[in-house]
Amino acid sequence: MRYMATYDLMETMRNTNQWLGASALAMASYPAFGMVPHPMFNLMAAWGEVTERSFARMVAKPDWNLHSVVGADGQDHLVEVETEVERPFGDLIRFHVLGREEMKRRVLLVAPMSGHYATLLRSTVQSLLEDCEVWVTDWHNARDIPVSTGKFDVEDYTLYLADFMKHLGSDLHVIAVCQPVPLTLAATAYLAGEDPKSQPKSLTLVGGPVDPDAAPTEVTDFGRRVTMGQLEETVIQQVGAKYAGCGRMVYPGLLQLQSFMSMNAEKHGKAFYEQMMRVARGEAQEHDKHNRFYDEYLAVMDMTAEFYLSTVERIFKGREIAQNIFTIEGKPVDIGAITSVAVKTVEGSKDDISAPGQCIAALDLLTGLPEEKKASHVEEGAGHYGIFAGKSWRNNIRPLVMDFIDANSGLVPTRGTGKKKRKAPQKKA
Image (cartoon, rainbow, N blue to C red):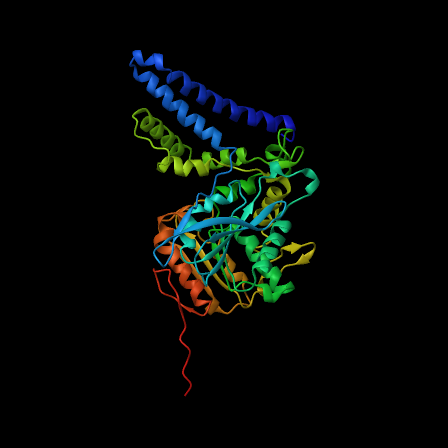
């Protein structure tokens, strides 16, 4: 598998399916066929439209499409996406709300680097922008990064996070979603040892594998079943000459997408069939629920081989975070060194990727943190996606997270409103 031809062959198969969809749509929509009103042509065109769109989205980075936010003054304020720190493997970007007084809450949202772009958190960002200043880690597609740039593994990822936190200063609240949860915890511990004044005020860990063995899932079982040698031989490929990262060894996003889809194959198959029928009946829209979800879900990016393999070996197999034996450049990172950062874990009771128990394990590692600075929440009925972007996030989890941030910012929590008030000064006797 570790050959350039394999990577190009996989891309050729994707491109062929996109071409077949476009050809079917063009042929079945040929005006002359209107003289033969047969439903076959509608179905063929519908299949072509859904197929072309789906396979085209797999190689395109989605736009953020966050154009404006309604401020407290009732007016729409335009949103600009600004690159604040530029790095080879990922940038720190800010969502600047124009014409609005700067908000007291400053939030760094750590996006997953697990096959999807940071835009997967679009709705999360939108919900936070209402009353927070928001920064996001915007990871780059490994296929577009030249080999001369060097490696990028879990240690480099952790150092990126530590640098981003130092850049933003200590008046910061960090929210990590899914894959980066254990490494965000490690980055905070790294700062506790190297630069304590740069630690954030709070850390919210949402559905991440701090201890994968605490509640095994199909994802963790896969990591146990295969050896590192088998994994490297079967999933690592070399980027083809079409891209700037030619020659770089990667875990292709298309393989990761295949893995995602296979976990719920029947559900996805039904969704695409129903969408095809809606298109055939003329009921589908450009931005309907199906297209909004799958335009994002199908857009995948490659990860560097060393990042993917070191994640499996050190986070899942070796459980270095879970056992508090993680190191950076040979130097131990002690999670127990975190003594002042408030930490909250959030899990979904129906999460089939990071099952309940995997994330809350972080609290047991925080041996130097007072109990009053620890919190946890399990959202009943919520799956993995729902705990950071769905109804459960909007209605239940987000208000709790805002309260947690306020409680650790010298602000008075006001449950459910997202608003905040400064604590009243105590009168002297």
